[in-house]
Length: 79
Image (cartoon, rainbow, N blue to C red; front, side, top):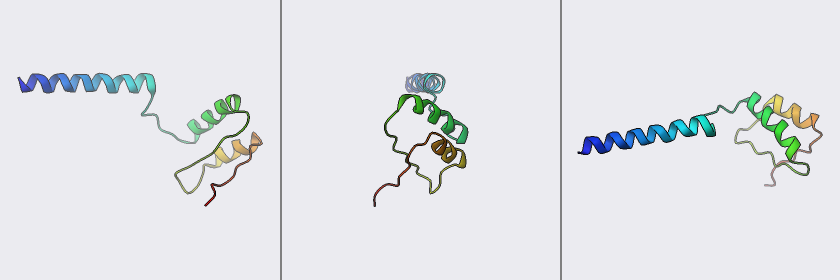
């Protein structure tokens, strides 16, 4: 009985993870190309302000180029 329950739980987990992978795209690698694509989409949607936050100590050169190209002001977070 426990084996059937475990098999059901595993198949449900597989179905949920497959749904998120195909529909939501949670496992998409965020690299400079994806970041650039997101910035272009945001440019059309956001006209006033964008708070740019990066967990890394540096930003991609491509990302910096797009921010300059769009004439967006980039400011650091206040300490």
